[in-house]
Structure formats: C-alpha cells, structure tokens
Amino acid sequence: MNTMTATIGSYLATRLEQIGLRHHFVVPGDYNLVLLDQLLLNRNMQQVNCCNELNCSFAAEGYARANGAAACVVTYSVGALSAFDGLAGAFAENLPVILISGSPNTNDLGANHLLHHTLGTLNFRYQQEIARHITCEAVAITHPEDAPYLIDKAIRAALREKKPAYIEIPCNLAGAACAKPGPLTSLTETPKSDPASLTAAADAAAGFLEKAVRPVLLAGPKLRAHGGISAFRNLAEAAGCGVAVMPSAKSFFPEEHAQFIGIYLGSASSAGCGEVVDSADAVLAAGPLFNDYTTAGWTAQPAEGKLIEVDPDRVRVGGATFDHVFLAEFLGALAKSVKRYPATLVEFRRARGEIGTPSVAAPDAPLSRAEMCRQIQEIIDPNTTILVETGDSWFNGLNMRLPDGARFEIEMQWGHIGWSVPATFGYALGAPDRRIVLMIGDGSFQLTAQEVCQMIRLKLPVIIFLVNNRGYTIEVEIHDGPYNNVKNWDYAGIVNVFNATDGEGRGFRATNGKELAVAIEQALAHSAGPTLIECAIDRDDCTRELMEWGAKVAAANARPPQRA
Ligand SMILES: Cc1ncc(C[n+]2csc(CCOP(=O)(O)OP(=O)(O)O)c2C)c(N)n1
Ligand SMILES: [Mg+2]
Image (cartoon, rainbow, N blue to C red; front, top):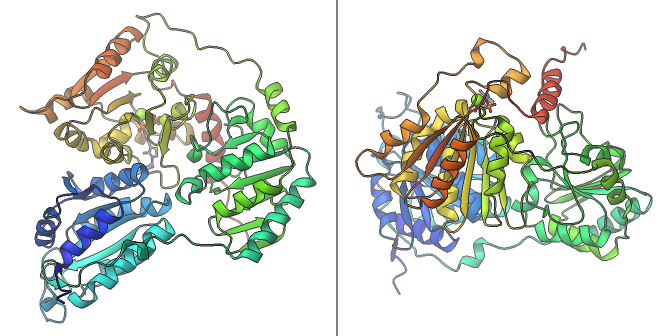
C-alpha cells in the first residue's frame, strides 16, 4: 500500500482541519508561497489574508478565543519576527495558536552563502531559537519523512498545554511527499489526574474550607483554557457562597446568577465585591493569574494563609501542594464533599447597597463616557461578545452587565495596545453567528487600524466603538507627560478610505447622545460590513476604577530599589 499520499502542506492542512479550524490567517512571502498553495487545496478551510504579520498573529489569537485553536502562516524572519509579538501574547493568554513559518531551501542550510530576509549571517536557526521562548513546542522540518511526526508533536503540545506552537517548513519541502495523517485521537487526549493526589487535594481543600465561615470563590482567566467553566459553576452551586471573577475571567461565571458578587480588583472592584473578598476568611481561586495589574499593584492578592489556588495541573492548599491534579477534575471532586457557606452572599447584598439605573443624558449635551456606556449597554444581548482594548475601555467594559450567554474578551496579561482590532477580526470569523462589539481607545486603534479593511473585505458586521479622548488616558492616570497626547485622526473618515470603491463599512462620529443613538441604530441595521462609531469624549472623562487602579499601579512602579 502506498502511504505516501500526502504532501507536507496537505498533511498540515488536514491536521488543522481535524482540530476544528475552518480558517487560517496568512501573509504571503516567497518562503511560504508553495505552502499557501498546498493549504488552498484543502476546500474545508478558508485562507484569510491579513495586512501584516503582527495583525495576522493577533487575528489568530482572536480566532482561538472563539474557536479553541487557530493557525497563522507567515514568511521567514521579516514576517515571523513581527508575528512573534502576537504569538507571545497567545502564550501569555493561554491560547493554542500554531504559527507556521516558511523558511530557506534545505540546500542553503549548510551552504556558505547569504540569504534574503535573514540577518545577513550564515545563521538560519535563530528564528526557531527565539520561537522556543514563546511557544510550548518549536519544530523545524528538515526532511520530509520527519514532517508528520514533527507537525503532530507541535500541534499535540499546543492543544495539551493551551499555549502556542511553532512549525518551520522550508520552501522546497512544502510540496514534498510524506506519509498521510493517522487518526486524530492521538492529538487530543485529555490528561488525567493522579487519583491519590486528586483525593488528597479535594480532602485538604474541603477541610480548609470547613475551618472558614466566610469563604468566597474567585474565577480566574485559566478556567476557560483548561475546560473548568462548568465544573466551577457546579462547585459554586454546591458551596452556595459568593462568587467573584477576576477581570480576565469576566463572563466565565454568569452575572445573572444569584451567587455572582462582581469583579474583584482590590479597590477598583465592582460595587460591594472588594469588601466581601477582602474580608473573606478563605478564597478558592480557580485558574487565577495574579500579576501587578490583576492585583492592582499588589494590593489585591489574597493572602497565602487563606488561599486555595487551583492551577491547571496542581492545587495549593495552605502550605501543601498537590501535583498532577487537573483543574476541572479537582473542582468536580471538591463539589462532591463541600459544605454550604451562605454568609458571603448576605454580606455582599449589604455591602453593595441599592443599584441605581444610570441617568439618561440630554440628547444634545456633549457626549460623556457615562452616556456612551449607557447606550452600549443597551445593545449587549445574550448573543453578544464584547472585546475590550487596553486603556479605559478595560474598565468601561468590566462595568458592563452581561446577560447570560454574553461573552467578554480582554487581553490583560499581555496588554498589547492594538491587539483588539485584528483579534476582533479573527474572533468574528470564528464566531460568525454572534454580535461582535469592540471598545477601543484612539491611541490603541492607531497601532493596527488597517485590519478594519479586512472586516470590510469579508463583510463582517462588527460594531467598533472608538473612544476618542485625544490621548493615552490610562497612562495619564498612571504617569502623565507630553508623550501621552495622540495625533487626532478622522476616524469615521478612515472607513471610507478602506472602503475604496467596493467596501461597505460605515463610519460615524458622535459628539452627543443623540448622534450616538442614531449611529448605533444604523450600525444594528447594517449587515454588509463593519460600523465604526467614533465617540468624542473629554480627555479626563475616565472611570473611577481606572483612577483607583492607576494610582495603585503607579505606586507599585515607583517602589525604590531594594538595598541588599
Ligand atoms: C504595544 C504597546 N505599546 C505601549 C503600551 C503602553 N500603553 C498602555 S495603554 C496605552 C494607551 C492607550 O490609549 P488609548 O487606546 O487611547 O486608551 P485610553 O486609555 O485613552 O482609553 C499605552 C501607550 C502597550 N500597552 N502596548
Ligand atoms: Mg485615548
């Protein structure tokens, strides 16, 4: 039997299709053109061009958020080194993005001559070396017979670790024959906890909670990547206590649930939540990520002595660590034995007080941040995903109330401004039936604005709220200076530039509530392309949470150097 029925490119395409990809993102270059031809032969996957490789990697990152995994294909060095920024972001955000880079002809590896798109030295291995730092597996194919093994090794690692992987394919091998793919199951096995360690961890956690009177549960960003969302909810319902979420875990626990107590971010928490979490005598944090931002400058890190930390593959309770215990299994095991702890819910209702309805601004009053958010809130339905960019959009978004089913995407660990335009593009392709809403500041938009043209090209009805406060307001709150001013653009007008003669994007500028309402109405009625609504607000009109958080982060940044 002839098993050599695949090419390296078609093998890769089959694998990407098998792991659930219906799209892959590309920027062509001479080192990857034959590979792109091979990928195009697979009719079950659409090849999606991006404007540049940074955007290409962020588009894949956004697609992975919607779809569970993603792939992008770039050319050697000039492309890949740009894509590494988004790939590193996927590492930080626990998303399995496969980056495939074309590379030099295999005959050039040992030859004593220089190549274009390289450093102008004889070293052609540096790209893979760099990739090792920002992926869980980085492979370089040098012989066709090894290709299936190496491709599978990289994809398997990415799916298991929920981290990016890197595959380098020389330009003269993409069309070379190799063995055809075996069954997919070999790539997607679910890891199993050590049974004794799992039982011991669940017993220790139950015992730890029994000593507490006011425990709370805290959802962290790794819950989704590690498949723990429903197990977390079951545990919460078994324990009956208050449930807070970290900012990057917003939407991982339903906000309409009777046990939801809000977003925990120290003094920048949502109403009533900070008081309850800070005074809890035990905090079970599931898939958390505590860094200087998520702890508001180290002011909101639960003390070690009251923390149960459930990481993807280990649990820490008090002074003990239980290894090889996987998050979802642990939450499931604990749910079976946990007692009920209603105290924090009672406390939360008291601490939160009455929730008022936001007042409606006069239609022709200058647009305020509050009025903008009030109107955006009205279009968030259970089928909406709202993506929020680094800046005050983080806090505006965190303050939105999500009906059950609505989703929320934030990139708070990597925090690359400009992430959200390409990520929204990728997300929209991965979730074609959802309403996609993006909130982004003027400064961030200027990094990756050109990817709006791809939303136009593919007729994606994304709604972009571009918050024009004429500067880097989040940085103004951390540390101000003349560098925080941003050159103004005609943001609504730029959509027409991208439309050229064949696009159907729409651009609006809102300077008061009435103009915003009209623009939103038009956006909701427009399905043939994106709508960008520039919301012109005052430079200092920012959230209370940003001011609180900014002051804490500034203080953490300003700590003097320690003496030995
Ligand atoms: C790639 C990158 N460069 C620089 C920064 C630093 N930075 C963080 S937020 C920010 C400004 C964001 O301004 P804008 O998008 O206008 O949001 P605003 O705070 O005004 O709402 C900058 C420059 C970053 N996070 N990422
Ligand atoms: Mg701004």
